[in-house]
Amino acid sequence: MDFISVDVETANADMASICAIGLCRFAAGQMVGAMHFLVDPQDRFDMLNVGIHGIRPEMVKGAPAMAEVLPVMCRALAGSVVIHHTHFDRVAIQRAAERHGGPSLECRWLDSARVARRAWSHVARSGYGLRPLADQFGIGFAHHDAREDARAAGLILLRAISETGMDLEAWFTRVEQPIDLDRANGRAATNGDPAGPLAAEAVVFTGRLSMLRIDAAAMAAAAGCDVHDGVTRETTILVVGDQDIRVVGTTGKSSKHRKAEAMIAKGSTIRIIGESDFLALVGV
Image (cartoon, rainbow, N blue to C red; front, side, top):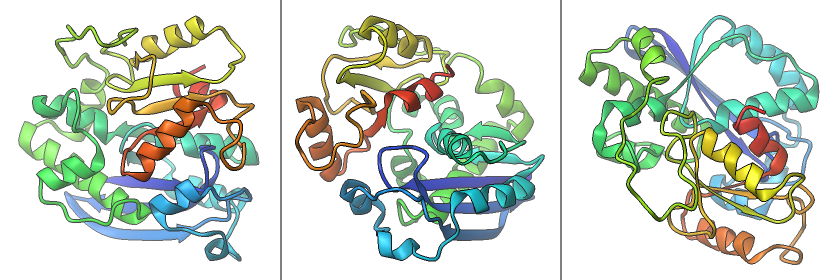
């Protein structure tokens, strides 16, 4: 039951803009080591992100760039089982590797959120985020501190293994199987495939994309996302046309974009991403 859990924080909405990494090593069902380090994203910091994780530009001065960090991570994680909570951390690392020309991580990824949704039926559809699960199981942690988030993800996985009696290897098979949700919910404009890797995510599109909106919606649904017309409390992902994602200030942002930012400022966990990051998430 040995694995390493990982979490990252980003400087802005670009998933490649990693500014902090947390790693926790677990062996024989116990956490045996943890580390946290800042990374110079070589990119701008969005105050929305700073408000979430508290990392400011001056804090990463002198920190290693991702191009320096990636080879070290690759050596450290090679051949390991690596746990991440939701797909964002894994894709962010992959996107950073693509941007900086670094090597890809040769490891086995396991999403603890997908594990949780199959281990406990009451969180199959919602409530499988890191904070609600940690609260439910009495796991104290400082949310959005990368090391603390990585630790919480590892402890949640151990809880699932303990309560279900399924070992780590069995979970690699189980997460690829359907959750068997009752999807009779007419509120979604497009219902996602419950067996998809992004099942139970709710995505909204805004801005001009490089493809037809109907094609983007079909891709999202095939990957498991419910596609909604507008931003609501159910929204988990807002995809913004890449031509708008780096607009500074409030000008040029759609009403959906502004509403999502306002909700994030009040504690919502909506992720705002660009079209290219969306394509990476759905595996294109």
